Image (cartoon, rainbow, N blue to C red; front, top):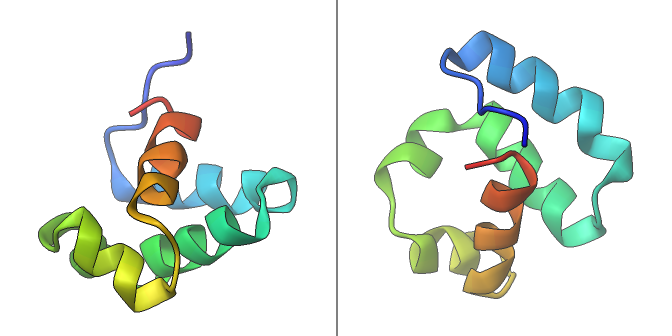
Length: 68
C-alpha cells in the first residue's frame, strides 16, 4: 500500500497526476481539494459533498484513492 503524502505540494501534484483516472465525481472533489485545500481540511464531509453535489461516500472514496 502506498503511503499518503505529508506535504500539500506533493499531494496536489499527486492529485493532478491522477485526475484523468478518477471518475467525474472524484475529479470534482480533486479540483476542490487542490484549489481550496482549507475547505477540504476544515469542513465536514457532508458539507464538502453538498458543496460539490456528490454523496458523502464519494469524499471517502476520494480519500481512500489517495491512501488516506
